[in-house]
Length: 118
Image 1 (cartoon, rainbow, N blue to C red):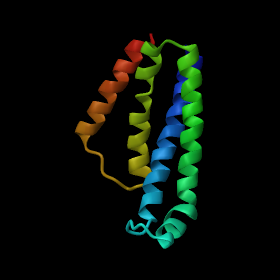
Image 2 (image 1 turned 60 degrees about the vertical axis):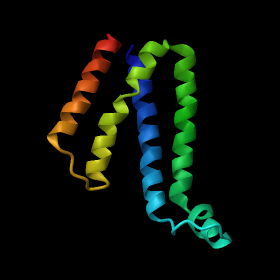
Image 3 (image 1 turned 135 degrees about the vertical axis):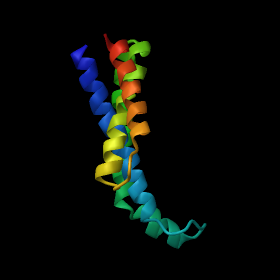
């Protein structure tokens, strides 16, 4: 079970990384237009977008491994670890304010994960 929790943690880090890189990539993009300039300057040279894709693909590969080797009824709820990681990323990297109700919600979700993983 420790191995599965570690795999879930790594997979959650990869997927949270992907979403965080997508957010940064989007902030570096120009307003959308169907022009070569938009695609060249906003997509093809956006290294944040490449990092998001790398993390996303690595996370999906690990997800497939987990689904193949562990029960879905345990693996899927453990992916909720990403909610906690997302909160920390929002605070640390994006300087967002997280109110106490959000923390309570995340900890209730994690308590449910703990019950499922037993």
